[in-house]
Length: 375
Image (cartoon, rainbow, N blue to C red; front, side):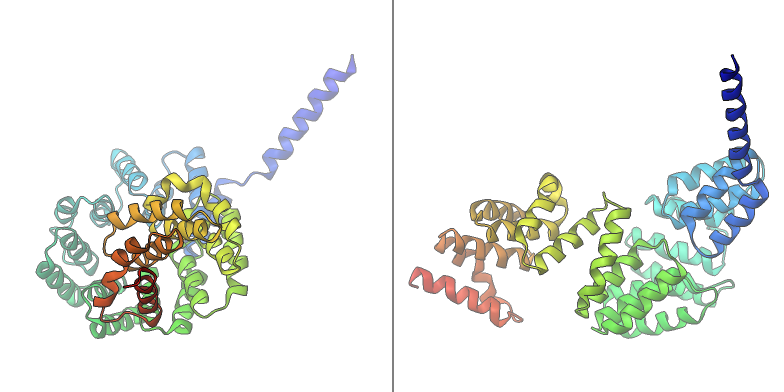
């Protein structure tokens, strides 16, 4: 007779203990603010959502969540939270800028321009510049960036995006100058760190690039581009013993992330373990057409384990999709040679003779194909 009562007492005590372990709204607020200030956005997101579950009209939590969603590149959630704040009649003081950011992320460039049309801050002019990139208006883009340099407000993101714009046009000298100016702005922006890293990598200054990527990770620990950049820099420096544990940890944390899957397969290829490469990529083979580098790696694995015909078929399809892809052309030529399609190999590889920067290895492959046909 006492057993049900005893079980009820234990359940009640357990519930009390569990409640006691829960964080109060004040604790959540303090913890969320600390995580937000350290750019641990996923952690902060959970805290602020928990606050809203207890206090649905908490303005500060909503405001932080808008900024977190934008940092996580989730414009749908950011837009919904902004709408909720509007409904509660307490929109953020910089609502127009935030709405402009949402519109940019969604590719609604005209809407982005409309949102900030009446503003002349550096932040607004950055949005105008990027919207004009999307609208393919390079002259208006440059004008907006230049106006932004003279406008009030923090210019870190504007200068970093301007540097990226100049980088994309091939004006590396201006890109470096703008990136250096962006690095002097406070607080430092993730975009600033990334453009400085990208420029260093482009200049084959891999150690310098690694420094910038590591600084980005230290300040923005949730940044996936910074994590991938660090891996690329370490690989360029030949420091594969450091790459392996990073990739393994990332795969464990994000098992469905295709970039980390590819990197893990690349490490297996580095070891010459082509069976493992095939085993890792085979479950994803239907989707590899959308992952050019992974598709080439999978085809290479097929060749190495004696499945040359499958490799040729896969690479032929890829070259039709990407006729200018140099690596695919060379690999397809190798595949055709392996399966005895000698004239097909010559036909595929002939363009090498017209490449002004053809490597010795590429020219040797073409010569081998020609020699095999007796030409």
